[in-house]
Image 1 (cartoon, rainbow, N blue to C red):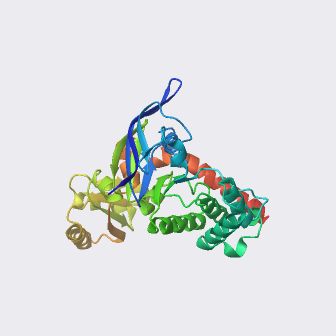
Image 2 (tube, helix red, strand yellow):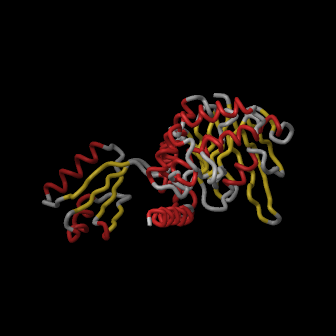
Image 3 (tube, rainbow, N blue to C red):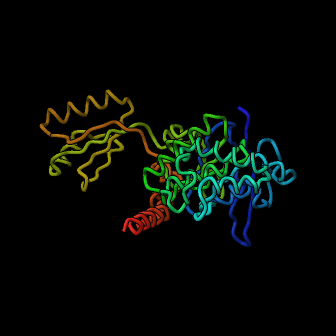
Length: 333
């Protein structure tokens, strides 16, 4: 597979702070590559470097086969960027915004207008193209932002935390739009605070911590690094938790008394599930829920960084989500 983005031993300092410390990254053409990491890990710095907004101190960086230092102008003509904050003007209509971006990219008036219409149709905004953006929902605004980043029909698109602050419906709208882009051959580099987002969208994921890639692979490959499948059992009667745990036994057993939950390794999946059901049934212990599951990206994050994802990435996301809910409530009032 041809590599659309390559970062080879990239270093970047801000004074005494080492933002990137030999970062290696390779993104295949026509794929979504997720970049995960705690706040301050270097995700946004990496995006700024590959999008030519920031010069790196050392290492090699290429986008679409072009060196970002030596051929920055050519790189910019091949890429699109959707940053963390909205780039559109809320006072203008959706179509006016896209036309404006087209003219900024030196498209003629007629071509800018036709490209705006193409993108509004593509992202399901044709019926609202003449409305002021301030009347759009959060998901609609983000889709318009995404459309604006595609004015020049880029080969490579950088998405820096594209759904922070959106409600679940808004996130789903953006995810659907990203999938359609990749289906058309666009390469996407995605940084995100949401592990579910990376799990659902990314073909491969790099986990960055302290400016270095500490793990890379498909979501399933990363999950396999922290162990195999597990059985989760939720009992109806919390008083029988210890008894059930003793019956199930074995290494790797985990107990969560507050949730009446027992977790156990399940290397043979369905055979382990059958054994667990039989043992509990013979003892007359009733399970409210029982299922075999694979490790989550949260567990990968915990294993490789030493802290849960919700403590290191989710705090800022939670604040942004709360702000979005507050804004929505104020508008409704």
